[in-house]
Length: 248
Length: 248
Image 1 (cartoon, helix red, strand yellow):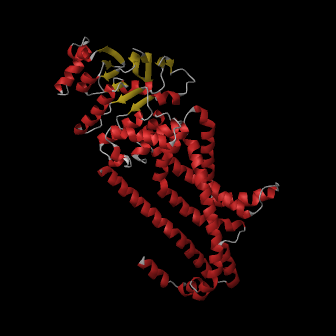
Image 2 (cartoon, each protein chain N blue to C red):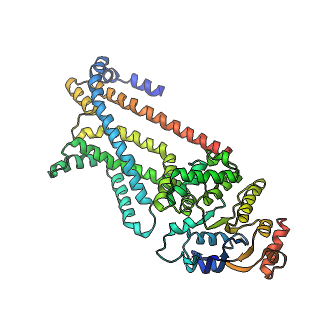
Image 3 (cartoon, rainbow over the protein chains, first blue to last red):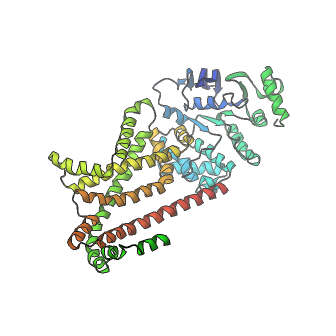
């Protein structure tokens, strides 16, 4: 197994509040790692740090053995290799679906328009969005918008895909189509780091699950272990609440 | 309204005022010359508007740059906007229109008309840049984050994602400022050029009848009304679109 991503002692504060308090994590190529934990435990911040949308206070991040958090690194080059999908989709409302998907490839990668469109069309077709290519985002359902957002990230052909609670803003009946897409990506060997509240999805899709609590990875392991025999009392407590809420 | 009309029509001086301001014959006689001079107002307005649209956007973008590196540029933009919104337009026109030609610098145009237009551009750029800035700030930061996460540079994110949305939102207030600019083209008359207002002064001086002022006022109204209706229409259309977007 080749290691693709490594975080060493990552710390991040917003004002006085320390959101990440020393995160160590390694993700191998083709591995799917799910981050679980309560809201505010630092999952989203962790992903935003990996994408360099937030600067670190200390620690370092390596992508394919290359340190991305070194000063002077071309952040745009790093981001072209690391896709991120947000909870609120963040599609560009003034652009058609097609343009949303081709913007990165034409502007950041310098691909000719025709080539970028061919790439986009292929992805849209593959994920059942072909007939939406000329629509604007506000004409799509939440599930469709999020699938477009994932396609937009995939069009960059990233080495690593970060998914930040991508189903949290969706109506319950629309969650399935997005999770199905992510499952398909996992089967295709895409390396993913996924922050999620969907425990049964994490259980069946993840190679490894990390439980974040108060800015630290408190416990990690294969999903069977984490969900069936958690070691830490905090993990047990968290899962207990999820079960009581009927979400597992 | 009716009360005001009655009060005016029954006032002791009304017959005199009616002769001085509402002489049908003077109206017909002065209209052609004033209308011809009015074309100069239209030209001033069109040239100034085209320049302002670009310069104001530039100032607004400078002002929206974040980070300590850009502090001098930001400060410059703020100082500029403060200065030219603070000084009365008429003073700027006088200072530039009489001052710059008097400097006798070879290569600089001496025409007061040119400097009158420059003064209008300077003043209205300050106002319009604030309108643009409001638009830029109304675009949610997550839009820029989404663009940057694709590997787009700051400039590319601004150009493709932030500005198109910002400009669309501020079209109505932008047009409102241009209605003000249309009227203020008359101020250029005070440093010499014979535009509609100056022409009407000439006519009044020749006959001691004030009707030409009324002609000029009507011409300005005829120019601004279509602009005002266009603005209203755009506001209504935007509101309808937003409602439609929410319903979808």
